[in-house]
Length: 154
Image (cartoon, rainbow, N blue to C red; front, side):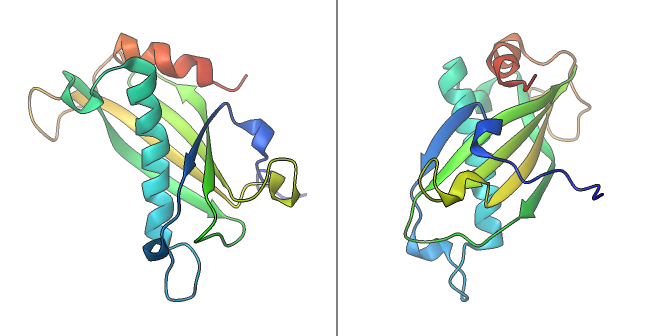
């Protein structure tokens, strides 16, 4: 048996956002550039937080900084088709949130029911009033906690 987690499916995610691909997103080989995957992960998380809280998350006394990211690639995707980004929360701690983002390209229910890529994205909340390099803040701001708890996969 493999220790690798199974390839995620659309049904594994709670919140969805669609991104339009651009010609510049592809690399010289005609598939999505690795850095673009990470931009999509960042957009999926932070756009959700903006919409769910109604706050400018950059201007709060406590902000989420990215402490860890990773990506599992399953198949190539790229321009010109749009990308569906599924979002779920794996864990809400006292000062951190662990997100998973699935990237899908193709119709729901079709052959692209499985993710083309899966990202892990960890926010750690720090004091935004004292400058960089501070330790995590406990607890996560209430507005953020209220927004992310419904995304926890049970």
